[in-house]
Amino acid sequence: MNGMGYGMYGSFWGFFLNLLIILLIVGTVMVMLNKSGYMASRDNERLVKIEKDIEEIKKTVEYIKSKLEEI
Image (cartoon, rainbow, N blue to C red; front, side):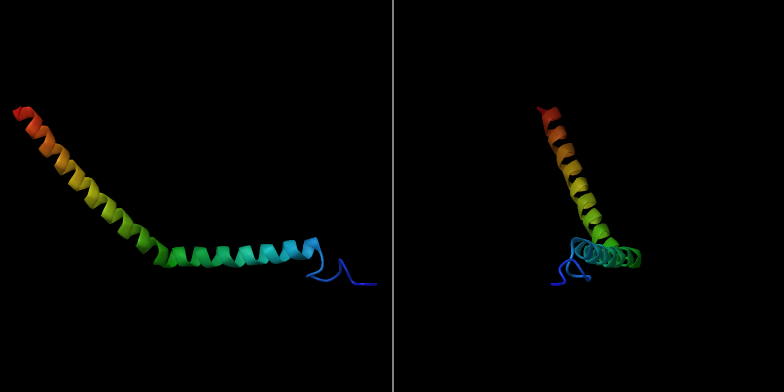
């Protein structure tokens, strides 16, 4: 017996089980980080920057619109 296909690391099912365990751990960590607000704070900062950019674009469009009405 060479032991091939036996044990946790010697077969496809063992590899598949290890992969599932790793994905479960990574998923759990992501959920915990999301609930703690670590990842959400970065998203909020990004949204604030986008909102500021939108306000600047609106002001620029209004300025261009007023200049076109003068012409």
